[in-house]
Image 1 (cartoon, rainbow, N blue to C red):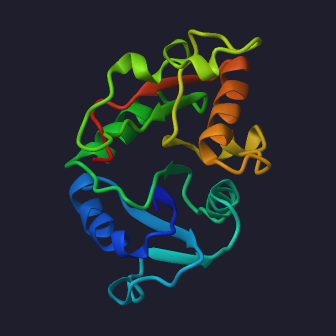
Image 2 (spheres, one colour):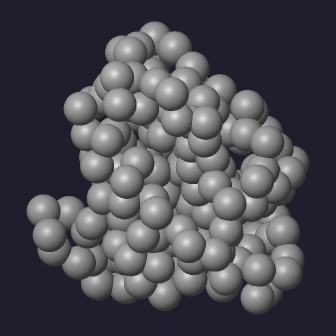
Length: 193
């Protein structure tokens, strides 16, 4: 498998559209989807051989951590269960990651909210007053839906599951990574619409 999609889920009814949109977003790479959540998969997805389902009742940070630890690919993309992927979007993001050929590079899987794009500055610490804290470099980048190498994730211990909300867990991990020389690049296009 070339890439695993890690999807903590509490909205199983959204997973059908997400699943079929993968085929327009990922044409060049083989992919596997790991869905982690408390509710059963929709019947249409149960027999899919490229889906692994893990029943989990913990918070999103914990579910994400469990999904990544069960990932068999070298590269993973962590996203949400309400995504519909833009055409070729994951392919071009993985292409960018492979172009750099460094474990220290992480791709920010940019997304829209309510059909609205976020300006590139949105993905900088300095654009978010809640993140402008002592010890946090305002020039660092943010990502809530990273595409990265699994072993680099593991090198930093993954998400701190004491953070109930995954946004804070991702910020914490990405700040630790950047403090140690890692770099976040924006995906060429929005991935999750």
